[in-house]
Image (tube, rainbow, N blue to C red):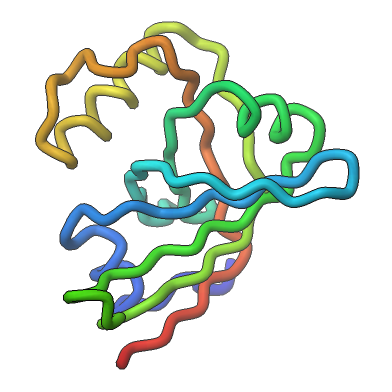
Length: 135
């Protein structure tokens, strides 16, 4: 499979923990909300994956339409250093043990209690494309 995420973008996605905005769509209307995430590089013929834990409207929208986008930005005093846009297909993971492990991985990345937000559900986004801009 062709590389969908460049090495430079992978470094940004695995670097400093910044928030992403997850864009979903339902009933022809967009919905965007901030989420924490964890990037997992491609293995073999698989696509790279971004994991998020979510609930509510975002989760309901993904169940209805799995096509999503993420907008990720790092900035200093309101001035962007870089931005990344990811488009992909989301899969809701119902396995309770995998949800717990993923939640702990994401919380560890952001330096919070491993069991915070344990009621959320894991969504894995298979990356279809990723573009970036540095400033």
